[in-house]
Length: 336
Ligand code: G6D
Image (cartoon, rainbow, N blue to C red; front, side, top):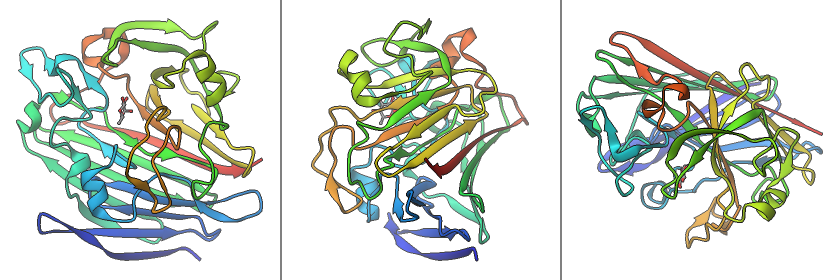
């Protein structure tokens, strides 16, 4: 039997934030909140059927407001960096040196969304961003639907509709750790990415505009490698945009041998950013369980390539007046 529960999660600046939990017939459980339209928790079975949380988060709202590196958050209007925060003559808010990142200073990850509809298997949240917000033209309506299917799939569908030509490149910023309950880091997770090319980035982590073949480099994840193997060649870890092979049935596959859990992600987005949290030793405690440490999670962010607006071969992130654009990512869990 599938089920739904809705409860208060806290308040931010006097606004109520709610948590919605969905459970499918197999017991797969998803929890989201309407602050940042954020995925809070995702309990999936290991090879023995034991359900454990496989995403990074916090047990309380204040930690999301104060400490979160976008744990589970919806990102918009535009994910990743936009060089100098410039789009032609338009100046966007700059929140990382000169760059604009993850939608700017007061982005949608840090706002309270409206819960529009809830059923036993899906929840839809909505936010309306006024024209001029963070410098962007156009009143943009963003909607995110999290849906839990009976066959242990989670689907995240994000749409944007604008009344004026503007930019739209959303993502979900969940950090995965398939060991369950953070028993181990992701260092030994096996990661496979259906990408022949990656976007070169500079010292600010902003794309230079060059698309480089992964063949013959450490960034070749086409047959799979562990994060440890990758870091032997690239000690700084992954914070890398990959251009996906078109129509790849699984864009990213992550397998954890110890628990047997496997995650396969298919997406309509053309790219994915992988961020391995390498070197991220922080004072805050994740999932009320352990302090944030290097490689505690792997952020998998399906999106169009960052800074696409400056590079014609990076894909189109312009949304025209009156247009509705939709991106969908399907997260399928099974065991090996
Ligand atoms: C993104 O690429 C970026 C990282 O550099 C950033 O630190 C993280 O979000 C929070 O994945």
